[in-house]
Image (cartoon, rainbow, N blue to C red; front, side):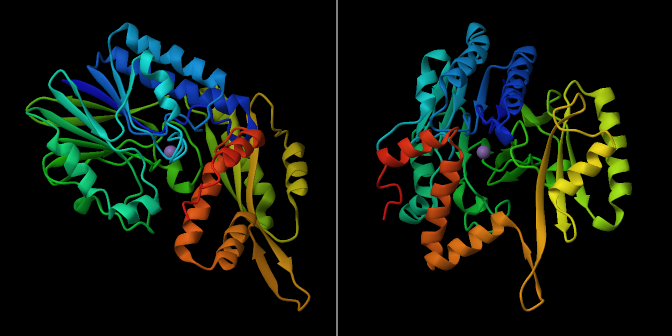
Length: 383
Ligand SMILES: [Mn+2]
C-alpha cells in the first residue's frame, strides 16, 4: 500500500494581497496531486487547512474542484480534516470542505472511514477553549480507535503540540494512545523528520507553500510525504519545485550598500534558475532611515518590486523611536498591538481566545467577509 500525506495547502491565500501569491498556493497543490498520480498512490491524506479561509471565494472553490477531479478520474480518494482556517464557525456552520464531497474529497472530522481495509480517522482542529473543556484529545481519539477494526490505522490531527508550539500544553506522547500505525499532523508549517511515539509513525509534513517566512523556514524544504507500507512503514519526503523563491535580508544601516549588492547577486542567481520572480523579506532594526530610504537605494541598484526578477518587497522591521526623556524604545507594530491587547484584557485565557478570533478574522479574503462572519456569529468568543 502506498499513500501521499500533505497538509496546510491554504488554497485561496493571496499573501501580501497579491493574486500571484494566490496562484502559487494552487501551483504547489497541483504539484502534490501530480506526485500522487505519478507515484500511483492508493489514496491521499491531507491534515487540515485545505482552504485558507472558512469562506473561500467561488473562484477558489472551482479551482480546487478542478484539481481534485484529476484524482477522482483516477479513482484516488482524498481524505481530509478541517483545520483552524477552514473549520467554519464552531457552532452553527459546517466546514466549507463539505462542498467538495462530490469531488472525491471525504471529510473525516470526528469519525472513522474505512477504505479497502485501511481505517482512516480524524479530529478537526479543537480550539484552546475546546481543549480545556474536553481535557485534551485523548478521550476523543480513544473513541475513534474503538471504531476501527483489523487493519492499518491512520489518525489525522491538526493541533498545536509542544515543543513545536512552545506555549502549548499538548504533548504527543500523552495524547496518542497505542494502537495507531500512522499519525499525520497538520498545523505546524515546518516539515519534520518522522518520529515514533507509542508504536505509531508520527509525521508532520508542513505546509506546501510559505505562509509566514521565518529564518527557520529558510533552511527547510517544503514538500509532501510519500508513505510506503510493507512489512514496515517508510515515509519519504518529496520536495516541491513549483515554489516561489524567498530571500531574507537582515538590515544593518551601517552596511546597507554591501547588503544590497549581495541581495542583487542573489536575485540574479535565482532569476537564472527559477521560473518565478522572488519575494524579498527585510528584517532588522532601523534607526536613521525609513522604508522609503531603503526603497530608494534598492532602486539605485536596479531592484524593483513588480519586475521580472522581484515580485514583492516585504518589510518586517522594528523602528527605534526616541522618547521625550531621550530614551529609546523599539517598536514593532505587530508586537506592540499584542502587548497592548494583553494589558487591556488582563486575563491570559481570555486573551488567547480573543487572539484566536482575530487571527481567524485575518484569514478572510475581504473586510466584508469578515464583517459578515462577525454578524452571523455574535457568540464567537463562547463566553
Ligand atoms: Mn495552517
